[in-house]
Image (cartoon, rainbow, N blue to C red; front, side, top):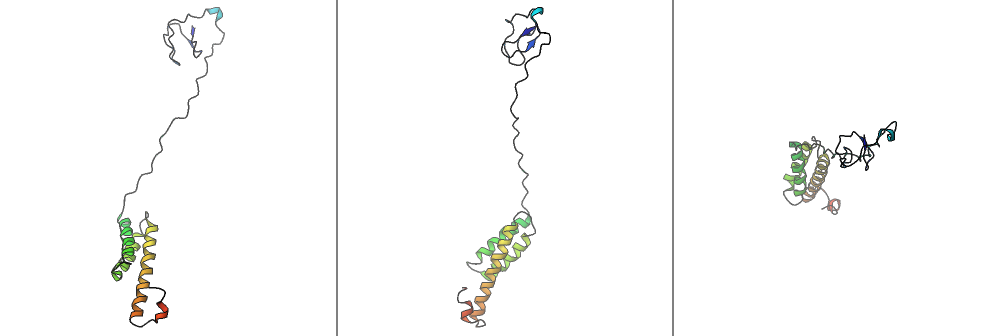
Length: 143
């Protein structure tokens, strides 16, 4: 029997390389039987570090028509402030309400609903003032 000088592992005489550390065992003399310990115990395996496991990315959900409707509704609500508000504000409300049924962009759908509703109310107040239904002091700070 031989003992590796590097790691202390006891090996059979015919082994040429230490399986633990890879040291060449061809020039190591065998241990005489009287010098051999009663219970040859090899050194414990050196502890290995944790095995790196790459994180699993969650599966991406595909876009649905509700998500597209949410985006279009929000964009229509913003565009309504720059022109054609009587067309874009109701379109923004309708598309955002349809888009709210999706589960990916509900916050954007709520924003589209709120922005379109406020814009539509402001435009309605402006029209009512122009036809002299509301007094000027009621809408003077709004538009």
